[in-house]
Image 1: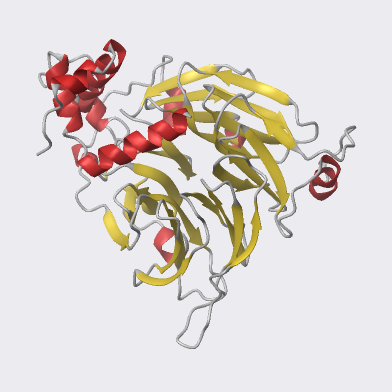
Image 2: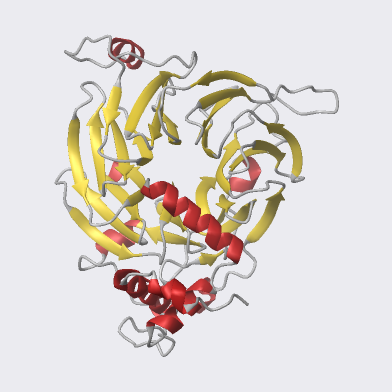
Length: 433
């Protein structure tokens, strides 16, 4: 059991901090919040989500699919998710058998998971994991065997990205660099895969937080805590000038400059998403912005009251999902620029989104993965998404809410181990810089 925080600890907490702790404990014990979004409780901090590939990603007869989660306990876990649950079916809230596989070997929190599509050898399924231990590891999914370790970064590896149908992948780190690595074409007793770094690029001045590619996979984008998004030739790893970017992406633009193509936000860039004509950014300045690829100019800005850690662009619906540090999901209409829905989804920072078959999955530092049906949300009356949950009243008072700040702080601290608390504090301190 964790020791109760001392009066000295509480003395250094502001009234706002103590109120936030108390509110978090209240939400953790709220019977309604415990069921909203059909939570899959992994019970460790979750830093990233990814769809599983090949045979493990195919839905089974029970409408389940499989996803990877990157965990703060130094593991990556493969879990099963029911894509068609019902708030009227109590059994849909029981997740005792969701864990399928666990990958163990890292010595620090796993920040990112990237499955590898291996069309050349359907009998093998690979996945990459990145960690605070400065390494990237390659695993055989079927056996959970470690196949190799990519080393070369001198600080936390924060993100990895694998272009479609590629023989290489990219990683971004707190050491300010982006590295390019080769992928194995197949693994056998006689194979000798290359785990050395192919190229290193170091144009950012602070940590590289996120990576993504243009839909045609020709341009790599990198977002950094130095407030910028840069673009690179995905094949050559060359930093693109504006004129080079236009040629490579086949964009029409009146801008012709030898200056580097760059987007500059007001604060740390935590997440990015690229479409055919835009790049979207989520940042610590409490905004999500859309930037025109042809001009580099800001086209849309969605202002929040909280720091935004993650975003998901649902292009076919004209929607953007945003996830805040306080666990709030907001859904924005890209045409009107209006926030049309809000969900009190999690009780801690939302770190990652993915979408599968019209269902959005969110992962949080509160240790849960939650599922959101886009059509159900859009059809729900009112701004706040508060569906009726069988046997659970939204307005009922929780008897478990603690009455005073000291007890609330004690209960809140007991939710994390000492090591997890230290990791979380370190993560938040870094994000505040």
